[in-house]
Image 1 (cartoon, rainbow over the protein chains, first blue to last red):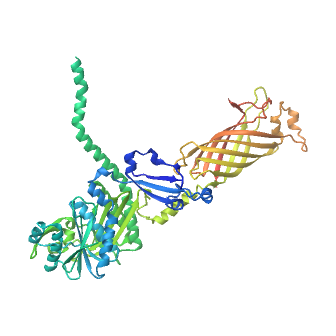
Image 2 (image 1 turned 180 degrees about the horizontal axis):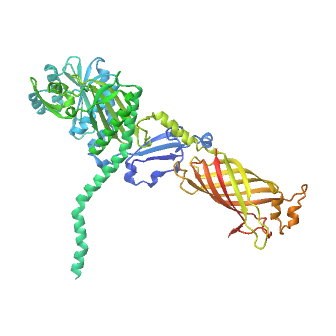
Image 3 (image 1 turned 135 degrees about the horizontal axis):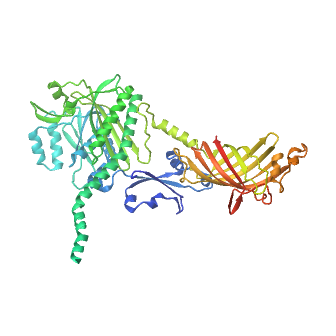
Amino acid sequence: MRTAGVIMVLLGGSCAGVFDPILFQSKTERRNMDCLRLSQEEGAERYPGQIPPKGGRALAGFQPDVMACSTRYLQPADRNARDEAILSTLSLQVTELVESAGALAPRSARWHVDAFYPSLAVAQKIAVTARTTLAERGFSVSDRVPTLAAGDVAVLASLPPSEAYRTACARSFETKVLGPDELFLGLMIVDARETRLHAGLCEGGVWRWLP
Amino acid sequence: MRALAFLCVLAPLAALADEQPDLAERQAELLRAEIANQIQLQAAELLDELVLGWTKEPPFETASPTVLAGLSVPVSLGTGLEAYLENHFAGLVVKNPGARVQLVHCPACSAWVVHSGAKGTVVSRGFDDPEALAQAGVTSGAKHAVFLDFETEGASLVLRARITTLDASLKIVAAKTLTTSTAVPALLRDNERLKSVAETRKEYLEVLGGRGLLVFPVRVAVRTFAPGFNSTAISTPFLWVMGGAEAAFSQGRAWTASLNLGFTWLPSAHVGVMAQGRVSRLLTGSSTSLTWPDLYLFVGGGVFFVQGRSALIFRESTPTIDEILNINQNNEPRTTLGMFTTGLELRVKNRIGIGAYLETYPSVTNTDNIGTYLQLIFNFQSFGVEVSFCF
C-alpha cells in the first residue's frame, strides 16, 4: 500500500537506528515521503501502540526521537511539476497571503476572491482555498467573482501582468463591478516558471501587491 | 532457417514495442485507480467528520434546503471518485438530520446558463448566477449551496467545505477546512452513529489497553501419563486448575513469560500442587492480531507435588492391589517431580486460548509404570491439554 504510514525510532544523540523500516524502501520511494521528527512522548501520544511510552532508558538519560514518515498520495510524476509544487504547499502559501491581506483591510468589507493560473483546475483550487480561509477567519466573503465587460477583458489581455491587474482594479471600481465596501483579492503567479504565489488587493479602485 | 528463427524471436519483441504506449497508458490508469482507492477512505472519513461537526454545530437554525453544487477531487484524479463521494455525502446528510442540511435536487444549478442583460452576456454555472435561474423560472426550493473540495497536499488530504446563500450576494455562511494524514488509519465509522476523532481514539486506546503488558490467565488442564510398556497400572488423568500472571515484553506480545500455580484434587485418589514457569513466542507474525487467533510456542519448567493413591504410579515398581486399597491415611504415598514442558497455544484476542503440550520428567526414568508418548531428544512421558481464560 503506497500510502501506508511508516514509523522510525532513532536513538537521540547516537547513530544507531533501533527500527528503521525505511531501509526497505527504494530511493524513489524515500524521496516521496513526508517526515516529521517528534519526541518520544509526542510519538507515543500520536501513534499509541506503535511508539512505546517513555521507558527506563529515558529515565536513565537517553532521549530517543521518533521520525514519523508518510508516503505522499501522488508520485511527483503524476501531475505537472509546477502544479504539484503549488498544490502541495497550497494551505501554507494561501494562509500566509490571506493573513497579510486580512491585516490590511477593514473588517466590515465584503471580499471577492479569484485566482489567475494557467491551469483552470488549479486556479479554482487556489481560489477556493483563499475563500475558505478568509471565511474561517470571520471575514465576510462572497462566492461571486467580479466580471468585467468583454471589451475590457480584451484590452486587459493585451497588457503586461503588472499593468493588467492595476487597470482591471480601477476599471472594476469605475464600472461599479466592485463597490466602495467591497474588496477583491487576486492570487496568481506572475512568471510562468515560478511556484510561489503572489497576491494583490483591490480596494477603492487601487491595486496594491501584498508583501 | 537461422533467419527464420531470428525473425521468430524478434517478432514478439517488435509487437511488444508497438504496444508500449498502450501499456504505459494502462499502467498510468491502474496507478490512478490504486491511488483513488486509497484516497476514498480518507476522503469519506473527512466527510464523516464534516457532517459530525454540523450535527454538533449546525450551520443553519432550522433545516434548510441545500443543493450540492460542487464536489471536486484532487487534480489528476477521475470522476469515479467524485461520484462515490457525492453518494457518501448524500447518505450521511440523509441519515443525520441533526446537521440541518436538507439536500434538494437541482440539475439547473450545475448546468451552464447563458444570461444576456444590459451589462452584457454572461456564461456561468447556475449556482453562480441565481438571478438568471430565477428569471428563467427554475425553482428548486434550494436556499443554499454546498461546495466540497478535496485536494492532496503531500501526505495529507484536505477537505474545504463552504456553504453559500443562493441569492445575488452568494455570501459564504459556513466554511470549514479539515485535514488528515496518511499516517492515521481510516476510522471506518458507521453513517448512522458518527463519532468524533476523540471518541474513536478513546476506543482505540481501550482496545490497546485490553492487551496490556500484564494479564492474569486461569487455566484448566488435563495431564495424562503414558502407560508403561509392561505395566498393568495406568495413571489416572490429573485435572489441574492453575492461575498466575503473564507479562509481555512489548505491546506486540511477541514474547511473553508467565508464572503459574496449580492445584489438583481427586477424591480418594490424590491432592497436589504445582508451580510452573513458561516463556512463549508468537509464531503468527511479530505482533498479536485483533482479528485473527494467535499461535504461540512455549517452553517451560516446573515442579509438582502430589499425595495420595495416584502417587503410587511414580514408584519404580508396579503397585500391588493391596498397596492401592490399603493406604494408610497417616502415611499416604507422596512424590515431588520436576518437569520441562513444550507446547502450542492458540489464543484469541488475548482473552481465551486452547493449548496442547508434552512434558518430560527427568526423574521418572526407571519406573515400569510410566511410558513415553514421544521420543525426540527427550522422553516425553506426559501429554496435556488446557483451556485458558485471561483477565
